[in-house]
Length: 239
Image (cartoon, rainbow, N blue to C red; front, side, top):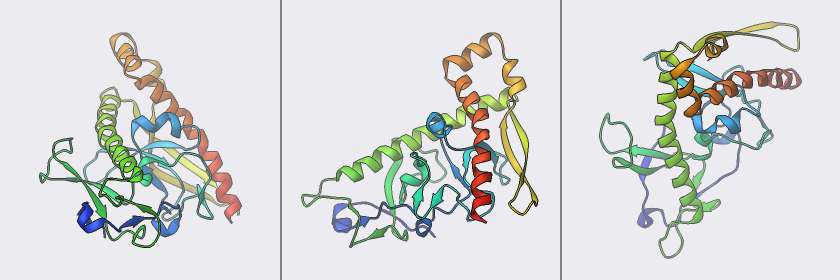
């Protein structure tokens, strides 16, 4: 369980963070939350989809990295098989803390916290957070920038998804893969772009989608599902 604490030089002058990749750092996950700002970089390698939170019915944007729990087919021998790792993983073990209970995160009510229970956090190896004078290191500033991107990106992604829902552009997709032994496995709960309705957009709505970059993002998300075949291939090779 995460144990987030506020960062300060007095308590974390000798704290270090390991930046290596691997399952030992919790990266063996079969889907990863992403933000709309990342779609262009992600679409080259990952299948991008929408997943619904059954507890509240809200949709989130994700990349699919495996077909079952604790399976990340992009991770091999603690190395990623693609150049781009989603921000949600790169920012760990740092967490945006909200100072007001139940409030939506913004620049005025958020603080930087560190998950002290993370296996990345130690005092012997990895990147320092502060230099000898108590100033934030380049690494810590990079993490601050990533968290800023994530926070603002989450808000833009929510607006983007709401626009898609307003025009009924999200639909459930059926995914069935054939495993190495010939067994077929069906996966439910994945959603993607309804391309028929997307192509039917006209007038002011089409102009709005184009001007906001939604149109391009929709086509990138739809096209990215072709990367499923790469995951199927890796899945068969792993057996």
